[in-house]
Amino acid sequence: MLGLAARSVRQRPGRFLATLLSAFLGAAIIMTFNSMYDTAGASGVDKVSSDTLTTAASVVGGYGTLLVFFAVASTLTVNVRQRTEEIDLLRSTGATPAQIKRMVVGEAVVVALVGALLAIGPAMLGGRVLLDVFKDSGQVADSVDPSFGPIALMSGIDVTVLAAAGAAFLAVRRATRAAAGGRRKPGRARTVASWAALAVGALAVCSTFAMKATDAALMAAPAYGAILLSVGFALVSTRLLRTVLGRVEPLVTALTGASGYLTVRNMRQRAAELSGVLMPLILFTGMATATLYMQAVENDAIKASGLTRSIEDKNLETLNFTVVGIIVVFACIMLINSLYAATSYRVREFGQQRLAGATPAQVLGTVAVEGVVLTVTGVFFGTLAALAGILPFTAVRTDGLLPGQGLGIWITVVAVATAATLVTSLATARRGVRVPAVEAVALAA
Image (tube, rainbow, N blue to C red):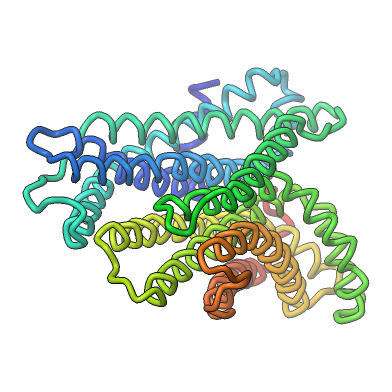
């Protein structure tokens, strides 16, 4: 089966491009920041520089590992669900569930390993650029030279490959159970992980009120809390989407008529697949909104106090914007990647709709309605998680409840999320409807 997995990747590389991109970007981020460990451990590095580099690597280490797993898991889940007929065929020809699992996990490991190896060069360059950012802000001495050693290399490869293997195993286990005709039970592990993330996130947010406004680590607790709440919502995105669809169905039907009604029904049936898109939407909105608002509140509070910003304040701002910028860009790419993988597979579905009488414009309209519903759902729960961190931080730091920056930051985040969702889905769907309907229906699922 492992040989079959290697031949499968070699014969159909296009199927694995989304997974390869997720693995490549994830490994690049992990290696880039973990190279700071190698740099900090080099000889001749002073303690201040070493502490700064170690902190940067530690902060992104947890975020990066979590995001890599989410990115690879979302694309692999879409990939495996698209292969239902192939799995049925393998079962009917005598393959056991264990053999199918080894094949799919083997494919994922091969692709992840290739992605991690391709990421080594960009990660070395990224490590140099990141070190220069710390030098320019005065956090690291100019005499410190970049180093890319075993910590960066092994952490990037290990995390990426393990994330791919674990995500592929979970996805194919659900697929083989469905192919065997078994009932799909709610994922207990995912439910437990979701409640754990929500509980720990709520505790982290509440701990903000036990701190003083002048504490250096004041931003850490609400930021971690908001991110964990976003993760908790993302883990149960399928249930959240079905709940939202039940509430918005009358509104969508009233605005778009019968096509809207059919769109909502279709989304209910495909809620598990669409959750792979909803996950990065929630994470992107929650992480970007929470961290950017909290940093803006911190900057305004220092300015209002009339105090000169210390080097530590500037260092914290630089670290926050660097970390948030990289992670938010990765989450946005993960969103686009998942959307492309999910929409490009629907060429056959679009052809069936057109043979049933739908025009290309109506097909694109259906995709647009789906994108709007997904965007509203992801933005709502991401904003909810972000507010849970922003409001306590603002209350402790400024004695006010709402940040004074207005809706500008939030509108920008929502605009980016909306553009990424609608542009990607509509552009991919537009390319799909260009395929003649009869030819599209004849394509293998």
